[in-house]
Image (cartoon, one colour):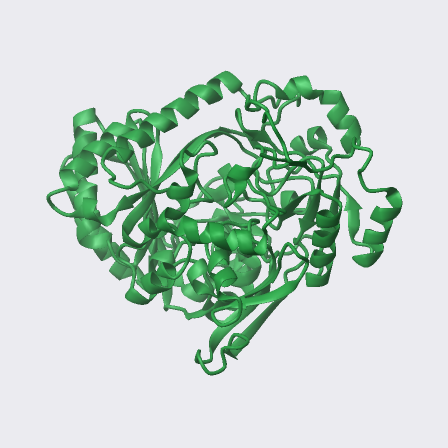
Length: 613
């Protein structure tokens, strides 16, 4: 079934239960064109665009029912489909819809041609690299898509100086990546082969172009800082179709906006040059789960962990997550920087001893896995296959004694899932812990930066009480690598010179609470979103985070991982930086060609981005 037939088949009625009900603007000044309009570009116009971009204009297919039953759980497969996004939708908010055409861009000239065509023909324009947007910002029906998936050239530099900065900035190691480069591609070149580090996402299939423009965190951001803080230069196509260089010396205002101002709002990035860093000898992980026998015991466990975190983990050696769950379990899934196995275990021993002293109140579920490996191998898929074959590829589903006694105690727990399609790159892999995001339909999702002041001894009890109260409504995660409290001064200084909400600079963690259904899509038999259940889940998520907002003086949220219905998103995402971003938006995109939900300037448009209010 082709795209148009599919859309006719499901009908608009199928989408009514999940799409938001909003009033239509009483007056309008401008409306973008749709295929049903007489002024929609002619076939000859599209043919000319196709010739301009070297034959890389493609109609976008959308056989969603077929996809749901085949490769929809494979993020690499999803990324290879111009009509798909990794998140399939959000109850009462949006559902992924295909563009009419996509320019499968290969360079900045292709992007400029698409931008000019959209502007001159009053088209809705969207940009997609990895398609990881939870809020649906990389897709829109009746639109022209600029698809950067194939722009993934990578070049290492020993001594890079941004253009025009020859007398202002010292040469430094860097890497230039195409805008469609995903994390695993960058890590393979920079870390596995190059022995260096670049700040990409924790999820291996996140596109670096969108990551940097939204701020960007990886497993080791507590040490290296944000991805936006590592941007040295960008090549970007602005709304006038001009290909510009943006760095600290050339178009510095645009450069600053691209560092955390939100993807898809200021232009289309074609390539970026990012700072690279030295690797430590080891990366590692700590994974275990503690179960409390009662609510009172759980309160004490949370209180003990808060104190332990402040005393032993509040530094740049530890990142990733602690999961606080309604069933009175605390799940630790953290990563370590620069610690060998003995050092990492020594850090955790006091906490594990505390747990062991109360066997009637606490029990460990499964194994305690604390270990380290050479940092250069962290994303080396073949190394994992060779050194942990029984765990990665068990013959009979059982982890055998020798591995349990030896390798599990040497290697950390995180493992990969693999892209098994014929001809797929052997490096196509993703952490098992990220599998839950693949093809999910979000019910509710919110984030909140937690200030480091809450870790002070006189505030720890208040923080612990709020964490416990929040867990009565919904499970949530403390992402320690997504707050820069405890980071080195240079990482904080670089992040301070970005558009990200300054709350990140003094936060010890980003709280994330969410719930979802997977795989699901409206109008798909057997995969219908559960609307009523989703609304109840959204309410629980909101009540959960509200317990924590009550103790945070100036709440802020991370733009890429936040509520679709975020109240006062301008302040939540960017704080005092929003006014400056709004001015830069007016300068480089005065007519609002680039629209994304809850992006800078989006309040001037209807929710679908078609009508100027």
